[in-house]
Length: 292
Image (tube, rainbow, N blue to C red; front, side):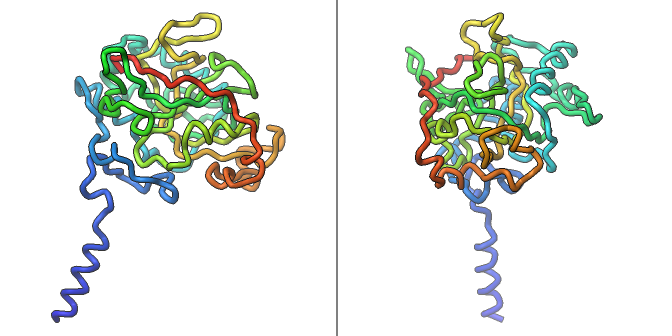
């Protein structure tokens, strides 16, 4: 009997989640669980971040959602750019720095794909694209403040998102594409802007959750908006769940559904191609707006 109790106690201890004392506790298996790294922000900053209101808290939870349901829906970059018109059509506040969308449910299922599927915020999607640039965020303002409310206003690259620009072709302008973000929570150590810049002109397959970044103005090539990230749509893949690199260099040889054509980014980094890669030019660390 005593032995049974001891064994039971050991099993209970082993079963206790590794997240037990953390402020940020995932509600599902992490999409990058095999390479995840516990980071200091996981202990101190919850999914709702440091919100100014309930609506801000809901926005931050959406930004930190690592549990969008499988399977991923295959989309194109053109789909994600076209979704901008859908958001404008339903009249959500856009570019209002201090105002979060009151009810994010209106962003769900707002865009119809050619195959009849409807997508919107909260869907897990997958797209083939090209990396245009990658930079850390969390630079300090002159008054010493830094960071985003979603990351509890902590300064520094390790506790803030990695901002990534993607486009339809190598060397495209950021204003012709969209933004994707790798959040700091349990972010793998090898997911950093320097390693991402090694990808160069190879096609990549990105999987993650759709999120609408309403508190920025749209800043396109034809109509740039000072202080806002350049892009053709405020729809983001945020957070990123996975990045795969194509074994070939031509998009024609990189069918989105053919897993044999792709290798995970962490494995690709050990390849000769990665070691010999010429890095995409380095970009300055992004400074968030004080209202983000």
